[in-house]
Image 1: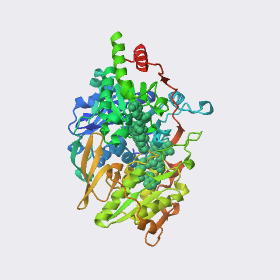
Image 2: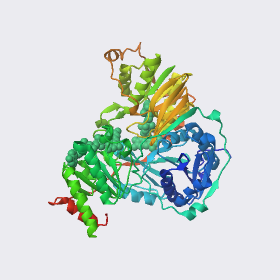
Image 3: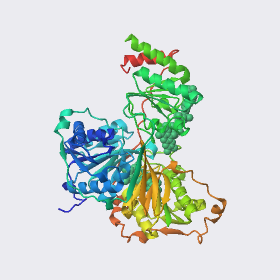
Length: 369
Length: 267
Ligand SMILES: Cc1cc2nc3c(=O)[nH]c(=O)nc-3n(C[C@H](O)[C@H](O)[C@H](O)COP(=O)(O)OP(=O)(O)OC[C@H]3O[C@@H](n4cnc5c(N)ncnc54)[C@H](O)[C@@H]3O)c2cc1C
Ligand SMILES: Cc1cc2nc3c(=O)[nH]c(=O)nc-3n(C[C@H](O)[C@H](O)[C@H](O)COP(=O)(O)OP(=O)(O)OC[C@H]3O[C@@H](n4cnc5c(N)ncnc54)[C@H](O)[C@@H]3O)c2cc1C
C-alpha cells in the first residue's frame, strides 16, 4: 500500500530514535524510552527504539528494552558510524514509511534538533520542538494543566475521546508554554528536552526479552553530501549535571572571590550528600567557569533532589532550567532577588558568610541523626 | 557565488515579556529586534563577501514593517533584500514557514556554489526547525550549530558544535548553514550604509506576496498559514507562580535550615 501521511488509521506504535555516540547509547534515549512506554500504554500499542550506528551489538541494543521498549530496530553500516544529516534522515524516513509509527520521539540534543526537522519536512508532517511534557489521555492532560498552568479550567472544554498526542513546550524564552497537536498528519513528531523526562528503573529481564530487528535498508555514499573529517571531545571531563541528585550552583554573586566561591559550593554539595557544581550563564560568559556547568534555557535543564542557588539573581532564563527541582534553596544578599520566588527555602545574606555556617550546621544535623 | 541570509524580526524576550490574560503574547507592547543568531548569520555572509566579493541577499518573511530590519541589513553591507509578506502566510508553523521561504529562495535562484545562511534558532518561536526544513525543501545539504567556516574550493569546511565537543564537517555547495552567536561579532551599520540603504536602485527591495509565490512548485497552497499548518497550538498558558517559599529569618538561619532539612529527611 502506498504511504499516505493523511491516513491516520494506518499508523500504529510509538518509536523513539535512540542516539548513540561512539557506539554508546545516551541517557536521553533511556528517558525517552521510559516516557514512550507511558504513551504506548495509553495508546495500547507497541514501543520500539530505533538505533543507527556501526557495529551496534544486540547487547547494546537490548539495553533500551530494560527501560520499557518491546522491540529495538537496528540499522548498522559503516556509513552510519558518525552522525550525518543525510544518511540518518534517509534511513529513518525510509523505515518510518515502511513501519508507519504513529508517534516518533527524538531527543532535543543538538543532533536530534538537526535531524528531526529534516525528517518532518520529508515525511510531510508536523514537528513539536523541545517538548517538556507529553500526554495522550485527555484526563491526564487536564490534570497536568491543573497543576502546571494558570488557566481557568472551568471555562475550558475538553474532548475526552481525543487520542492525539498533546505535546507541551516552552516558548518565548520560557515565558509562555504551548501545547502543540498535529491532528491531520502522521507520525506525530516531537523533539524532547534532555533531562526532563524521568528515567525508569532498569529491568534486566525486560532487556533480555527485548526483540532485536535488523531490517534491510538502502544507503550509499552518494546519498551523503557531507563528510565528517573529525570528531573532537572537549578536553576536560564534563560535569554530569543531568545525572546529579544534588547541584549547588554559583552566580555572579561569587565574583569577589571566584575560586573560594566554587570551593564553598563543592563543599556544600559534599556536605549535602555528594553532588556537583552548576552555574548561571553570567559566570560562563565571563569565562570564569566552563559552559558545561551552565543551568538554564541555553544550558542544561536539571531536576535534582536538592538545588542550591548561591548568588544567583534568578532570571527567567536560569529558573527555566531548575524550577522543577524537588527542593530549592537560595542564598542571596538581596532580599528582593527573584530567585526567592522559586525557592522553597531562602536565606538573605552574604554567601561567603552563610555557606560555611550552613556546611557546619548540616554536618552537625547529620551527625545528630 | 552568492550568499542568501534568512533573517527574522522578533520581539525582544530578554526584557519584560508581556502575556495577555488568554495566554497569548502581547506583541504590541514589546520592542522588536533582529534575531541575534541571524545577525551572526549575516556577519558570516558579509565576511564571505569581504573575502570573495560575492553578493549578499537578505530574505525575511514577516509583516510589512519588517522592511525596516531589511534596510538595516543593507546598512550593514547586504546588497539586495526580499520581503515575503502576505496575510495568507500568517500563523504558519515551521513546516509552512520553511515551505514559503524555500519558495522565495527558489525565486531568487540557487546556483552552483551558493551558500544559504540561517540563524540556529529564533528567540520567540525557539524551535530551531526552520533552517533544516528550508534545506530539505530545497534539496540542499545542511550543517547546523556552525561555529567556524572556511572555504575549501567548491566545498566548505565548518566546525559543528556538539554538547560535549565538536565535529569538523566538509560540505558540498550549494548548502545551508545554521549559525550560532559564538560564530562571530556582528559588525555595526556603517555611515555610508545607512546613507545608501534606501537607494532602491543600488539595493533593490523585492516584495514577494502570495500571488508571486503560490504557483511555485515548492508551495502546497493547502499547507500554509494558520489553517494549513501541520501543527496547531492547542492551548497556550503561562507557567504558574510557585507558592512563596519559606524565608529563614531567625538569628541563626543556617542552623534553622539544617534543622528543617534534617526533619524533612531531605538530608
Ligand atoms: C537568550 C538568553 C538566554 C539565556 N540563557 C541563560 C541560561 O541558560 N542560564 C542562565 O543562568 N542565564 C541565562 N541567561 C542570562 C540571564 O538572563 C541572566 O543574565 C543570568 O542568569 C544572570 O546570572 P547571575 O544570576 O549569576 O547574575 P546576576 O543577575 O548579576 O545576579 C547576581 C546575584 O548575586 C547576588 N549577590 C552578589 N554578591 C553576593 C554575595 N556576596 N552573597 C550573596 N549574594 C550575592 C546579587 O544580589 C544578585 O542577585 C540568558 C539570557 C538570554 C538573553
Ligand atoms: C508558542 C508557540 C509555539 C510554537 N511551537 C511550534 C512547534 O513546536 N512546531 C512548529 O512547527 N511551529 C511552532 N510554532 C510556530 C513557529 O514559531 C513559527 O512557524 C515561526 O514562524 C518559525 O519558527 P521559529 O520562530 O521557531 O524559528 P526557528 O526555526 O527557531 O528559526 C531558525 C532560523 O530560521 C530563519 N527563520 C525563521 N523564521 C524566519 C522568517 N519568518 N523569515 C526569515 N527567516 C526565518 C532564521 O534564520 C532563524 O534564525 C510555535 C509558535 C508559537 C507562538
